Length: 429
Image 1 (cartoon, one colour):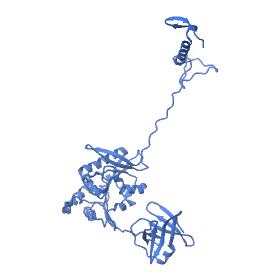
Image 2 (spheres, rainbow, N blue to C red):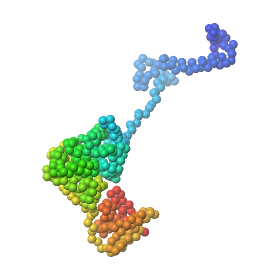
Image 3 (spheres, rainbow, N blue to C red):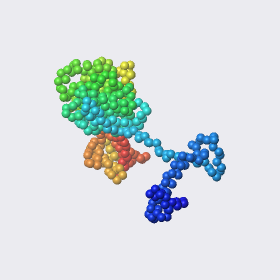
Image 4 (tube, rainbow, N blue to C red):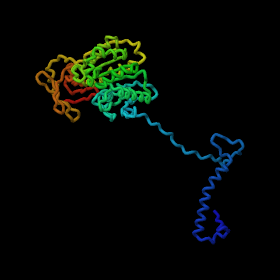
């Protein structure tokens, strides 16, 4: 770059070399900066012939010789398209505001949730022990636990509202309104299928199931009260109307399918409550089931929500089918455990020993008299009853099975421990 011979100073042209050195340096820097700024602007204002967008020719432009290729415009920087966050699944926190009051609750989405199809929805009502305002305790008992144990059995959206303390109950009109508002919100958010909406609850929630089904008829495709009834423990005077009170529920619920569960030894909500409702619905031609769990107390929900057939039974019912569906009544007493098989006690000696999972002793099998027992790692001693010569169960009604494994010579080599969730193999040593 050639330096200027004269510059403008104080309005006069003066020789460049008479400027002080520092002034000359500053002036030179300003010239370089101006060159950097002006040059690209001039190129944009007067683009070379042939500088066109790719794929668009200029008919009036001359062809460029090989040593002077056309200049292409600079590309805009490419930014990746914003990623769409996948929908969270599992137990999700929610809040609903009703009449100025905020209520926390939880909605469950199965892991295979797809927003492009309609989903069956369950409204679950917890018991009195899960009341509160944290929006969490209602996920600890009953149906939520069954979902955690076997999520593959429950392809439903499940809405779990929570009743606060201060003497609130699911039978209170404002609590029923809150539960249904939460249900409506989640059906809208997650594309719930109005043809397949179901209602269930345990204990206090069982009371709520009957009340909501009565006050909001035609809303649910099926209902499942567990350890519930219509004679509320906090209003004992309702028992005085036991001859007439069920009629109002029968009339409102109609042929909506009902499946009740109750423990025969329930000291909190007596099984008579479910038996009265069964008799009323069966007498009117309703579609009703009652399963009584022999030997179970108030917590029959542990057994009820573990029934493999329950979610399939729910999915078999649609709201529009109720009017034309075949109604039937069934009352069944489910024994605490199978009837023990008759086996020769002499075979028990073959099972005696310690059984290990790796280096950890899981169980010791021993014989006392003509009975077989297991002693676990905490030294609890439990009798084992035979289902057949190699499979044994506990008298408590647990679904656990102890299955003795043998090799080709008939020698006992281990135990297959099987429960409702998984299997483990323990080696005999």
